[in-house]
Amino acid sequence: MSAKIIVGYIFLQEEIMGKFTVLNHPLIQHKLTIIRKKTTGTNEFRQIVGEIGGLMVYEMTRDLPLKNVEIETPIGKTVQKELAGKKLVVVPILRAGLGMVEGVLQMIPSAKVGHIGMYRDEETLKPHEYFFKMPPEVEQRQCIIVDPMLATGGSANLAIGALKKRGVTDIKLAVLVAAPDGVKAVQKENPDVDIYAAAEDEKLMSNGYIFPGLGDAGDRLFGTK
Ligand code: PRP
Ligand code: URA
Image (cartoon, rainbow, N blue to C red):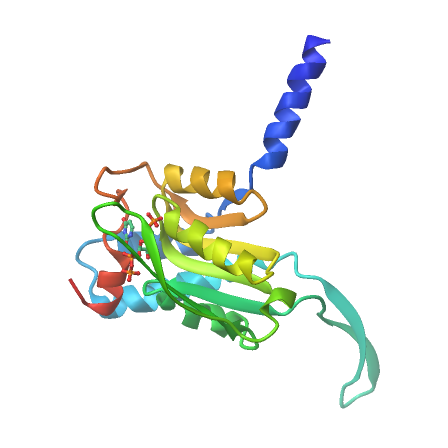
């Protein structure tokens, strides 16, 4: 009897926690190490953030549905596969999320791009939304939110909430570096959103930075301070 209760409890726990996947492909890991280094300059940082974004989306879209289509090659008729199902929207959280967009679009050139502007108050670490622009009928698409950093999880949760308010139901989140606190916060508030990261780091520091992390992703991408 008590075993049944425990099994039921574990099942419930699994059901309410969103899925968190670290994409530890060797190319992703190698590139992430380069951008972690403090000596890596803006040019290289920007290029590699884009490349990792592309590799991550390649991995994240393994389960996209396919359908059979009849086509004609120069030699004759054949039935082959093409993508079926929902169209995609890439949604960078400004500013730093912009760095991942180019790489994602290289993998999925037909994806639309929606933007959510957000900044963290440096004292409270609370995010503030300042911009929201999506393609038409976004609620019929799958949205992949991209942002290099998942720290407290506040920005990601606010972005997910903003999309849900507009009727979007199919959302994934792709980050380069995740802090355990941020993962938990998103899993708790949005258990239906799968989170993908290139790495889960050791901890979130009291100043809101991820350790060891890679520093301030926005500043490193755009050469600001
Ligand atoms: C960074 C990062 C995330 C956010 C993560 O953005 O790009 O959006 O912080 O932190 P959180 O999980 O604690 O919310 P920032 O607010 O520094 O703005 P920026 O992209 O303009 O640099
Ligand atoms: N945002 C960043 O850019 N870096 C961090 O370490 C945390 C939040």
